[in-house]
Length: 346
Image (tube, rainbow, N blue to C red; front, top):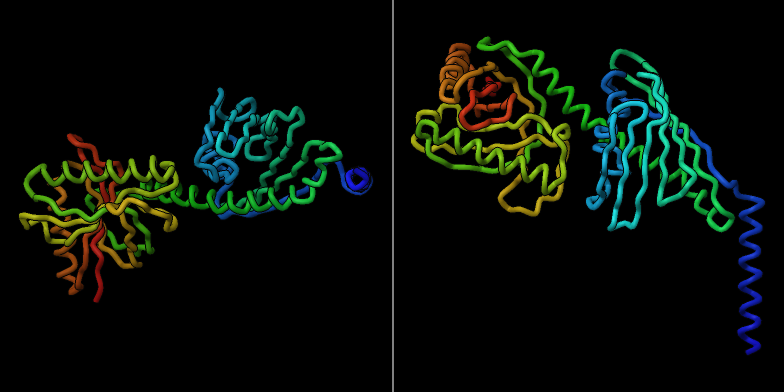
């Protein structure tokens, strides 16, 4: 009995000492600043912050959980927009609001976590460093914590900084794909032969062999693109702005063959775990290409392919695979919009 009394007294003293140390030596809330730079123009960057549907697609706070469920509320963008979220697996929930917006200058967010009546307030300021570079500064003000919970303030800043670091990687990937798509759309000159240097790419897709009969091949491409798109978006949880245009790789002159083999894939920024053996990764190495853009029915692409091959032979260049980039997703019964690239070398 005496042992338990002594133990109880020790516990009371320890709790008292802990509470006293927290009260006198640890602030009840935290204020800190985090700065980052990103190599994209202010208009591209700001739209990823003031639109919460965009924001939740790259911010690590939301993307790190597969079980989180998010509801969006009008106006969806700018001051007054809001979301609520529930994450049953991690036993968390909350609400987030944009309370203030100065377009392309600053935003103020309020985040209420786990029914806490006091929000985390985050002011984000944007500064143009150049036409292609933006500085982003987060000013964070955390809610007041009770004496017994103040120990959390020891790791709040580190946790927030880690989240921002991971989020910036995601944001660069999102903007990279978006800008690449925008640039490709803006540079299209149909039926003109051009020379381009292509950087390396990582594709997630499938290998296919099928009949080369009229319309059969294109139907097969449409079907397999749907498989890849659904796997990437539903099973892997990727959003449309997280990957590039679909690319088909095949022998340049196999349009003459009765059977056609091809690889069809979607560009991703990095390798991720794939559990379905039907899908695999393929790397496109940097290359010099003869390029033509084509719009029309799929069978009509053959003329463009022949022009690229004739150009390579005329220039005494050897050539490799033909790569077909679908600028618009392939849909059965509709014309295609594509970029044909023939890799060439001496």
